[in-house]
Amino acid sequence: MSDSLRSTAFWSAATIGLYAASKLIHARFPRWWSAPLALTPLLLMGLVLATRTNHRDYLDGTRWLVAMLGPAIVAFAVPIYEQRTLLRRQWPAITVGVLVGSATAMTSAWFLARLFGLDGPLRLSLLPRSMSTPFAMIVSDRLGGSPDLTAIFVVMTGVVGPAMGEALLQHLPLRTAMARGALLGMGAHGAGVAKAHQLGDEEGSVAGVVMVLVGVVNVLAAPILAMLMRP
Image 1 (spheres, one colour):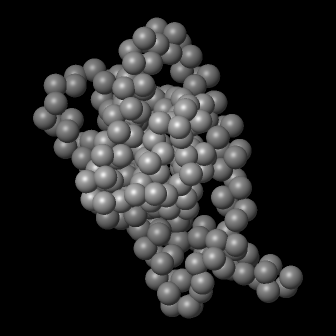
Image 2: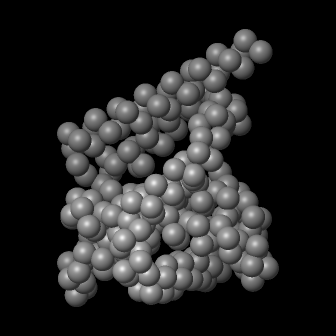
């Protein structure tokens, strides 16, 4: 029991500390490679390899952090409530965007996985990559994928998505705050929301609402998706 407590304390402190350090580094060097979503896993991988720690031991030591995703899902109700006026005013466009965007993200992941010969749990783990982590892990589990592997795909999307979204905004005729925010919130979940807030408060609010609605819709639709998407 004492070894388990020491492991939990060490790896929890290491994870939180390295994330805090990554945020400071990103504030000093605001580049895509220094984003906490990209840098923290790399630093943790280096520490795990240096200490020759088993992957399962690391997961056991940080299980409580994963459990905190539950309250995080509940907390996502707050931005929806705060933006209720926007939702009432723009609900047709937001609803269509969320449904079409979710379908596009999943089907493109499905066909790309087939193109590169990925099948089974690996393919199913890739499908929820455009959702924020709490929702993505739930959907992955219900589809028959690996939630831990899905979390990796979510992080990769969070690293690449904002950079691609910024490039697309320079070439696509998206002039309204709602269109710009929806693109980033749909395509790059939490990282996209952060990028949208850099563009403006309205873009950030729209991106946050879209991110949450995408997660809610896909969690509710997961049983249907499981029947449609299983090989």
